[in-house]
Length: 324
Ligand code: ASP
Image (cartoon, rainbow, N blue to C red; front, side, top):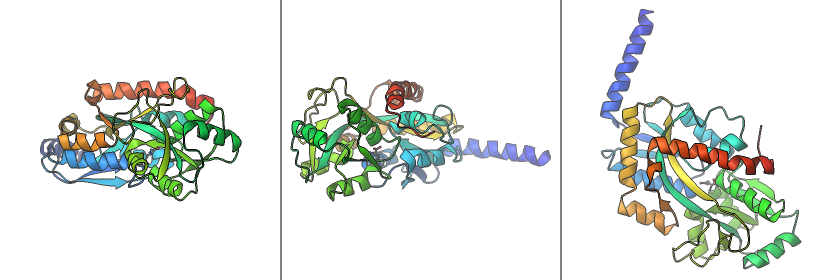
């Protein structure tokens, strides 16, 4: 009993000290998708921008990949709640409870929400060897090649998977889903012609579209984008796909039980980063939009994720693409 009490007291003391002195050592920022992909890109730029507001702390980005981001997210859910292990994840936080119904953690209760970062449109792209050069030709090609089309994605629960489901549901065509550990490796195969199509964030695709290494057909937002490389791309809605709209959002999460002072410090550093002109410019050049509204506050971040879980549930249930 004495030993137990001593342990409890020392834990409290250490936790208290950590919160005051935080951060006193390197922070690990877990990205649950492959290095070089769109989520990784946001994380690496953000880590740089948050360094100064966190007193010069080192933020190490670690890619813990696989299973539609559930492996990396689980690692953070189970990590020590001391602020030294943080997760950066996207809309998968809303897709996972719908698509991966047996994940060993709960999105709603196993994390401290630390604030939202940005919103990123997606683009529908193909290998350049595919003969269709615009959406109309793509539709014709899709209907001619029914049953033979490979669609790359970052696994069930990922953003690219969700967007791919929306495309298949809108066109009423089934495609073969080819899962990767992120859309960076999927992009390598798209460039090599091993897969046909992909729907991915502009934080990955903009550079390849600009270099004409992939063919782009449409953006997934309700309005056209303004950046020069993407401004001529029509929206899916303009192309006649009613109600088609998906935007990927990113946020920061810590294990449940992380001290409130630590959450507040990370949130303040995040908000400072979201005002950093260099970070803003880097993100905007890739089509991302920095979030500046109430969703950068942890409470509203949590409410927003809950609303997104409810929003995506019917589409995923109808597509029957989930793992029990
Ligand atoms: N774009 C990926 C997704 O589809 C994630 C990534 O590779 O960053 O979720």
